[in-house]
Length: 339
Image 1: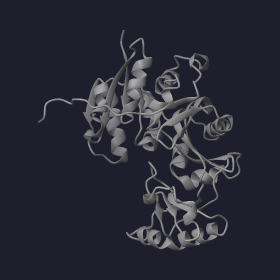
Image 2: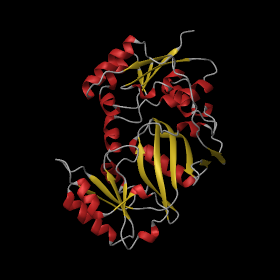
Image 3: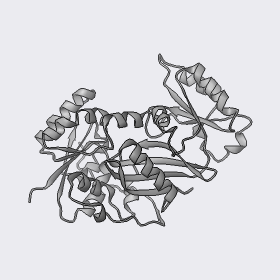
Image 4: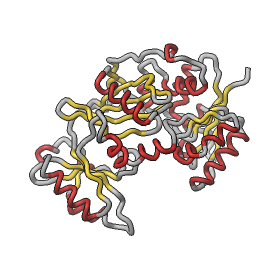
């Protein structure tokens, strides 16, 4: 039987849970990345290719050539997603299914936190109090406005990943509220203004109310605006996670899925304040902690592939087990002879 060839250009950590769920050995994996960063993870795949360094349009051209050269049936991109979404029809014409969280317009909104929050202002999914700043003067004014309303203010770039650039503003008045916060996350207004004002262009920032409550990460599987499964996990002080059933967060995830007509796999981040979960962002890709979510008994990447291929129904997808405390551990491997 001919195997279905899956191409991953990142998220190689999802190969193991797919392999475990793929009892029929239906899938073959080809993988690639722009550096050898993921070469160890790629040992789980059937092929790894080092990508050329290409800008957006040229990368999509490369991707179209790649799928033909390797006989790819399903492309599961984790990078260049907006550019790929804009030219999705070209992959479809080659018989390749592309698994993306949304269309190009939705992905454009999700990657910009300011536009994402603006899109939700009139909806029933709450967002923190926020102001978008386009320059240093607007940034200082936004901080002054929000500090009149709340004790702690934070900020981050409107476009960014992995929490890069996230900082919390420390003042004499709020220092006692931040004693348990990682010190590298703290800064002052003067230092922040100095750092943000360096360089030719000011990087747009979103200034927010800092919410001190529990943070939850929700790994979601959807199909054309319909949420199929949501696995909620929150972090404990020791770094482990708890998989929980949280109907309020799950309902918010369902509304977000409908609002942006999301599909495939994506991750939503929530933070509690006074018992209310506020959405922080949606990452239009599977999360780095997807393997922990799969310990619920739902191999989300496997079922995302099955849904994309039309080879399962919602009833086939198991319900997640909750009440589990989980963690990830690293494993040493031999890559081969030293060069």
